[in-house]
Length: 308
Ligand SMILES: [Zn+2]
Image 1 (tube, helix red, strand yellow):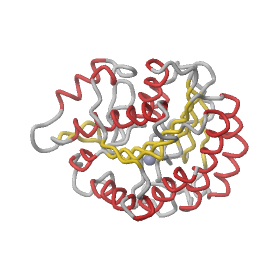
Image 2: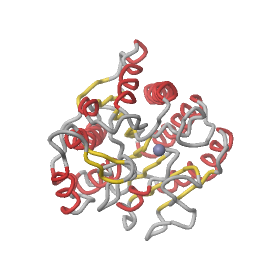
Image 3: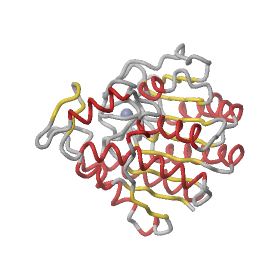
């Protein structure tokens, strides 16, 4: 059984007109996952996270600063490309809460795996800084939740968004129990993610990909570097930062992955999960800015989760 957690509050998180991280992204994802092919999904609404949930990896100052910044009307800029609207605070809290609920359900055996359809995304949010459309580190926080509250020994995070997961890296730099793997185009925003960045315990694996590299190059890197490392780490749970902006049609980057490449990658990650942790895998939406490519790739990703 695959669980789908939807963050409807994400439809009320506004960004400036013309911004690529737009409400229509989530509308397209919801529409794709409402097709008859997905009737078997177990569907739940994302609950609100509590402040204590955010404090698993962010300091209180960061949480308080964003709570105070949330506007009653209009938009407030957080950095050059991140903003808050009146609906943003709830959307961000439900994004974190959705990831936690997915972890809870998968660890309770209520579902084998789960996809969290949410915005804003999370993997650029650093401990003390919202950036890159992100406020809180949804997936890094979910890893902490799984370790500190469920008592897991080891977790792995695979981030295949086209941008480096600098926030996840920042939140988990000292966390020996989490293997963090990020593949991303380099050079590209945010500029971090060189192979030499390995974490305080050598537990971070950054895999920069050259602009123009295709799905065959991605498959070679995952087969030779990522899947063996995942097996070695033997996590109790695999978390996925699922960004779909490495797609050839995406306007923000220059990799040329196909929809089928995302399906392949999902099947491979599910296969390792089946070997090492009973198939337990939780995936959360990050980027993906061509609306049709995004909805097609999400559909392929979730279909592969359902087949696992
Ligand atoms: Zn991205």
